Image 1 (tube, rainbow, N blue to C red):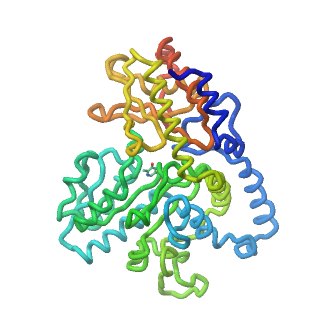
Image 2 (image 1 turned 30 degrees about the vertical axis):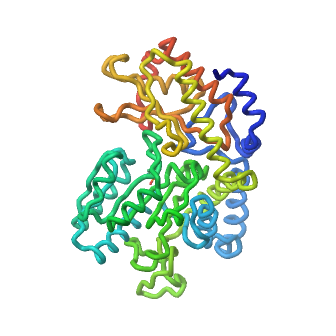
Length: 431
Ligand SMILES: *Cc1c(COP(=O)(O)O)cnc(C)c1O
């Protein structure tokens, strides 16, 4: 039996508890949405202000050199590399996740087209994040490929001789289910298939070892668990065995071997440098730098392994408390109980019928937000994929008592039926 007291005891002995002091969190808020937009590092406001007033205001164009603006994609890339099992110089911070996916998927199709031209399929998961599926669909049209969507348990059987690329998101945004990257990559390679891994819900959330898994291509997001702020640059990694083989399709001048030679022809930079395109958003990169430092601050305390241990303890506690205290309201669990198959979020379902045709999941989340417990809702498809109440548990700033209070609010929202108020059923542009 968990009680508020046992949760408070866990906080008192948590070796990572002090990391929370790195952040500015609003009073009265339990923030369970760091998987969508990470929180504000205390250093970011002053650091971005300095970049504006000193580097831009006083340094002006000199700051490309004197403030190190030009090398930010590589310098931030080297920090991210430490979190995802990449080596220095193998990864850059740049552009958005969607754009980086376009680059790497395009390069993967080039390689497959040369090495195995008869393979004309890209395989992905039906419940992959839509932008990944849309980008793949667009590239399929452009290059004469077909996108085949499967359920997670159908992936192994889908690795046929027709498949060129397996494109997966490591931790599923809707369910929090995590793939075994090493095992899936090995199975794909054994079948002659290249892998593209989206780490949007993994980088800074779970230990990742891109080189250890022998992955081919990877991308990920800067504004989720890396706390880089809204619109923060994403990242892109390509295994060195592939990095020099092809131009990526957005061959802009920042990816040129010597951009300031201003030659009319394109000469790609060696390695990952060619995955840059054009001028970077320096102010956003400055904020991302602060966000990365908040995650790297865990390194002396055990790094991603220690964050992972706490994340699993938090998600275990959340799952146990929901079972213990929220019974009888049609709440189910979409996230795997198996630690090896779980990311850093807990996703709940709600049975249709109890709230009429509507599952009530959206309104329950709105009622929680009104109480200061910020999670989010992801719509189902009316079929096998149910409406989801999603709660990201970020061990950098969430404690065990926070989990207790969040589940207590959920219990009260369900028992009181307050979620049925019309105000909580009003949908806005962003859910
Ligand atoms: C959040 C997320 C994205 C976001 O892409 P943007 O280009 O930053 O909008 C992409 N893929 C996955 C799997 C995500 O979770």
